[in-house]
Image 1 (cartoon, rainbow over the protein chains, first blue to last red):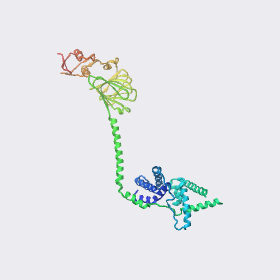
Image 2: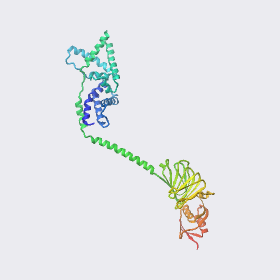
Image 3: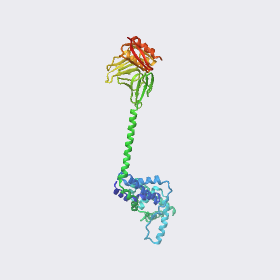
Image 4: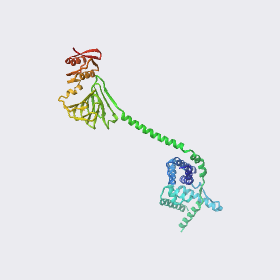
Length: 163
Length: 286
């Protein structure tokens, strides 16, 4: 792997890896650290790694790093809080209802089971296809569909029961 | 109906919420790359990698050498047992076989090879009790003796090589491979380089009597008897002329060497002179 190849892989994958870990822990700094460490490892092992399936490999490495090293840390789950929402063309009323909605979701997403949360956020925030999500986290497309369905179901039932 | 509306509402809410949603990172990907990776990947890589690979190669080579060293040591490690003049000694071999060694006898074997190969290098005289098992070989310059598990006596000194089989079966061969097979109470000798036909020995005790400090000779060359006395008592015997004649004699190893000397000298017309504590000289009577 040449430095140029490494740079290309970094550019194509860094944000996705960082987002993925962020969905899992809700901590921006931690997500950045792990993504960085993941690419450091990739560079150290560049002679042993084949460039095929590198995306899946990177996601696996990041997941393992997260589980092994940081899983025990107390997690600060502030996923929605850390997400920037684009609402500059909203009217003041709209912004108000939007803030209420955001508050609701904040709580709901914190409570969502981890595996559903990752799939849900990848789909919603990065707009990834199920196929792409499946490739990243090493699942079948069917399993991703199922998790997404569960996530939506969970949101529905929670929101309806609240209303 | 209300339920349906709720679902629609939630779907549109979710849609609305996440359209244009973005995680607000403190640092973007490019600045992270420039801070952490740009210098790292532009370093000359051969340095680090080369050293590691060299270390790996070196350590493989080192452990290989170590293994070869240990192996060679184990293969070449030998144990030598020596029974000095005036002494009898019993050597135990790793499998429980034993060798009673007469005076001035040497035995050498390889303890770490013993499991694969029962082989001893031998010179002098000894009585072997070999445990049953794989082939057991006794190698001497004069000849080789091969057995499976028996008791036998070997006399391998100077130019003489004599084997006597007490029990079992014994194969005696010369260095070029000619051989005879001995059955109990038979003996053979290698003379002029060839093993002689086996001869039945009615009274085995005369050959094995050295084990009980008895020395029985029947028409034996006088020089051979003198040599044996030298070995048993740790003395040196010289003579002016070459000693000749054969002798039939038996004696017990007693504390008094002079008694034994006079017993063997007289019948052949010799006498002896004591020159110093451990030196004797045999002279022909006129």
